[in-house]
Length: 253
Image (tube, rainbow, N blue to C red; front, side, top):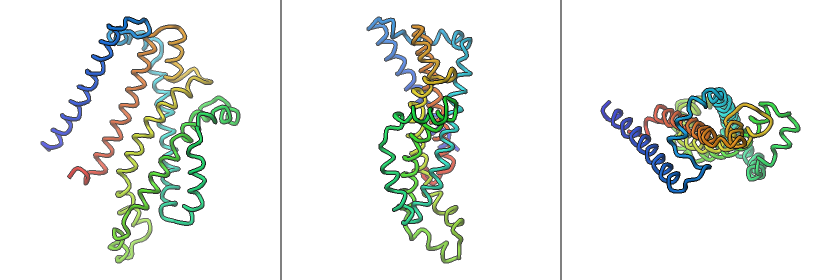
């Protein structure tokens, strides 16, 4: 219990310290440069009431919903294909080249095509984010499955375990750390991509809020939107860290 409390205390101490350091650097730059386009953090944070009146919470929830749906769909697809490719060499030989060919294509370049096919609604935004992150998750899961030593399965095989039992007791626990690591990267990419995507065909989302504030030359609200978007990404990272801590306890023994 003491070790867990110490870990939590140290974890949040570093977070608070990093946040304070970030704001100090920001404040010093704002004071040094004296640019209208770079207000001080004090000026930005003092406009929180205006942000609430402008519907910042509604925009935040719209962005969070898109990220959550995109990550959920991507992880579901990646688990199915990644496990299948990791277990079956023939499937890997068939799908591997297709993924390698598709992965390097800049997905944002497909945005006009996706929007033409699926209109400007929520579906097109979620599809493009899924396309951006799903290939990375598939490759990570496939490689993690293939890197599991065959010897780890021998005890279960000797007891006549089924494929589902082997997956539940060996495969999934073994690949969870790689999945969580890949999810952290995917969250960062999804948040960045969403900012760009939300500047097209929508009036909801933090990407829209930030660009709308910039167009109105309201730099305080623009930076406030950026901070909120960063905070959402940060909270999602914390959630992944918490899940990692819960489901991969053996790593911390």
